[in-house]
Amino acid sequence: MRALGILLRKELLATFGSPIGYTVAAVFLLVLGYTFSLTLFATKVANLIYIFHQMYVLTILLVPALTMRAFAEERRNDTLELLLTAPVGEIWIVLAKFLAVYGLVLAMYGGAFVYVGVLEAYGAPDWGPIGSGYLALVCHAALIVAIGLLMSSLTENQVVAAALTLGASLMLWFADSVAYLLPPPIDSVVLNLSLIGHFRPMVTGSVFVSDIGYFVSGGLLALFLTTRRLAER
Amino acid sequence: MSKRYGSTVALASLDLEINRGEVFGLLGPNGSGKTTFIRLLAGYLLPTAGQLEVCGCDSVEQSLEARRRIGYVPEAAPVYGYMRVREFLAFMARLRGLGERAVRDAVDRVIAALALEPVADRPTRTLSRGFRQRTAIAQALVHDPELLILDEPANGLDPRQIIEIRALIRGLAGRHTVLMSSHVLGEVARTADRVGILLDGRLRGVRAMADTPDLEEWFLSLA
Image (cartoon, rainbow over all chains, first blue to last red; front, side):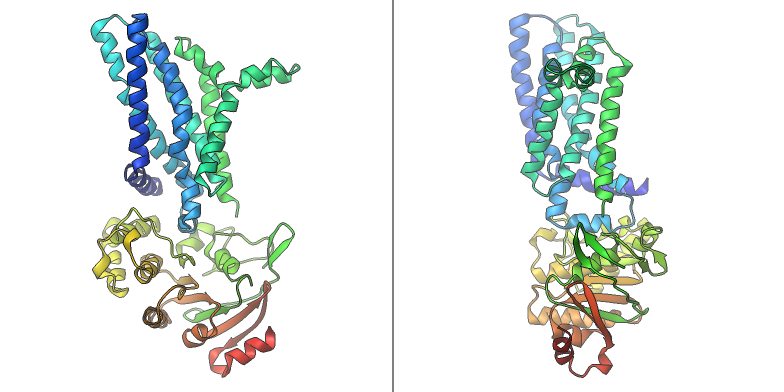
């Protein structure tokens, strides 16, 4: 656990010492503020469903920019050799990188919490869907960050890592559309891989263990594969 | 011990013992397998077949314990550019298990030993090649390892810096075991106690420098 703390401190220094994190956070909050204002004026309904869907899309588009450097940069700069020859398990290296990026994404989501305050001040929002919507986003971000780390561990080119993460996330997003073209029982398997299929019920207030399980197990699988990739020597 | 990448043999049936406290020079042309051997010893790679023991620890079964006993300087002398020299050394010391009080003493010790005082508070990305190489060696020594592994330590250094690094390595002999690789014959001849010649992934010979009056002639007879 001490190793995790040491590595996490280093990752936070790298994350907050680089302009990428600030730029991504600024773009995220700017776009969100813009669409929140538009949606609120257009619908005059005190809910955040549209905003949660915006956050869902922005997470898929922006997280690759945060995760792309995680391992790709270490590999390109040869610093990965320093980490992997130090007496620490690969799992701590992966977890530290995950927590640093995930922490930044959660901080971005935290910044968007101001919209809840606006709704509370000027309307009577239904807190149930807002809570479950945030839960959906927290789960969604964990999975996308974990996929990003896995893709970054596969290459030393940051752009390739970002493109792979975006591609994998989009494939998961549209899995339900593909499912209709496939024969049973493959269609139901592919349908259950759908990112939006597990996100949508939660964001509208229906929390199922199966949906949370999808995000958690998907995230853990991606982190496990990343660790295995690092352990391949 | 052997190392293969698919059907490519990087190291074939290498059998070698390095004595405690000596400076061992691994000599060979580019692509001969020096870096592969060094990475195996450092724990960055694992052997495909055979056994590798580092300071009495099996490199596979006791991997973490083996890594705790080594200090490793890769060929590129990598550093984290966003850290200051002192910060980088402290990070590496903590990562190798030193407690907070020991970290400060260890960092001060290696800064003094490698004459890094003028750049101790500078970001590592601003360092010259010579200071960067010294910083990389300092991180490998910060936890006082039994075995120091240096991959091409004189690469990219000017003559004065090469002389300084050579003196530093000679100064470590006895207290530390040092394994250094090089493709420069003169560098190994002036620094090592024993030398091994690696050609096409095979160890062709091992000799004490004291018994090798003409290293160049011996190398050419094997190549």
